[in-house]
View (cartoon, rainbow, N blue to C red):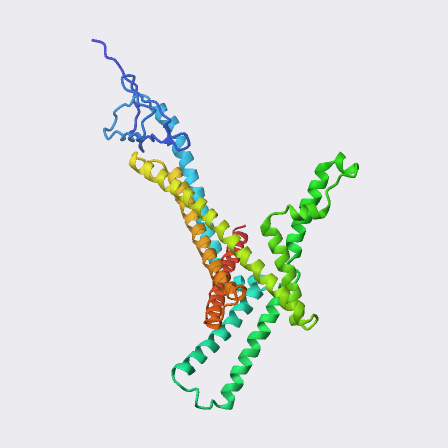
Length: 375
């Protein structure tokens, strides 16, 4: 009887053949060797990886098919995982290179950063004065005459706090140029888009563009101008009557602008929460369908990173909302001319707002330095 020879290899397989699937299309990217069985391409579960033969000298039909499959999806997934790991490693190294001293240095080089630093100093002194007066009143030491050195220190703290307040007002002079620039750009773009109508003398005046600007921009413009008038009054350049009126206008604009920002903050947080809910629902659906970080690593990593980013963004939105609430309480005392517990409440809310805004500004400068260190 004639023998039938089969194709065989001299050595067994050194590694198992890979049956990966494309993470982008989420469908199996292989064909089974046997004709009698074929994997359902719509199956949500990943295919099992075939084991290598442990019989020495045994022949396996279709070796070239396994070798070809080794070169496509698994290699691509490995490259993507390696690149993501390298990005995470690069970010960690960049965070290690950025020092706190560098962040504070960059923060203090801006007028906004110096304003926050002076605000913390100002309300720290006022907070000490409030606690000192409260302690003096509760321990019934009012009848006892305080030493001359203690009274001198308290007067110096009061003078320093007032000086810091005036210095901060000087730092924010001419802030009305920012909304004015925005209005002028809008006016020039409208005039340029008019084209032939502007040549015929039908160009709309600047007052029309000013009145049609968004309310937050108008509030910023009016508030900045009124703040400057009040600052010039504090410097002695203008009379008290004009200065007090400008201060009232600035307080009302600050009050209205804070309410507008609170509404915008609420809307923005609603959008972030909806996006966060979508990502969490997608992760839950993938886990219930049998997909794991091993079966679909790229999609899981993208969703995890997106969820972390949205959670961080939501955290800072809540910090901003808390800061706006502190500002609202502070300015309400000036707008409605409330006097009950005015000094301690304004001091506490001003100090809290200073800490919250400084923390947010610190995180912004830290993120900027980390991005620069990565490149």
